[in-house]
Length: 99
Image 1 (cartoon, helix red, strand yellow):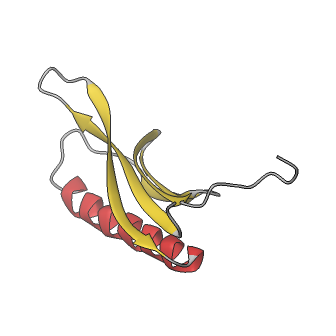
Image 2 (tube, rainbow, N blue to C red):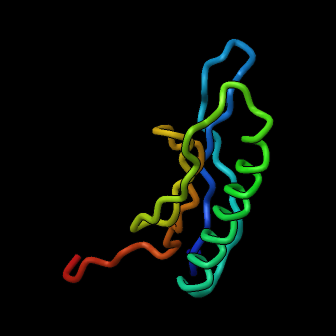
């Protein structure tokens, strides 16, 4: 059984025909939930900074790039579109008493 917490990055990847698909990458495994959330936040900030740098060169321009705090981790949004999610996943399954 796995123990601890994983940080997963859910992202959109655009194919040559212009359609988007979701891909998932593991960003690490941690023993404490605090460390997992810190890593998720750092990764979201890193991608936000990269997006802000690239935004200056982009056409058409994205009007708003933001990080949204969620109960599962952090979402990176370009305007209304969530382009990446850095979510913490509990590797320990819940135990239901009496089963």
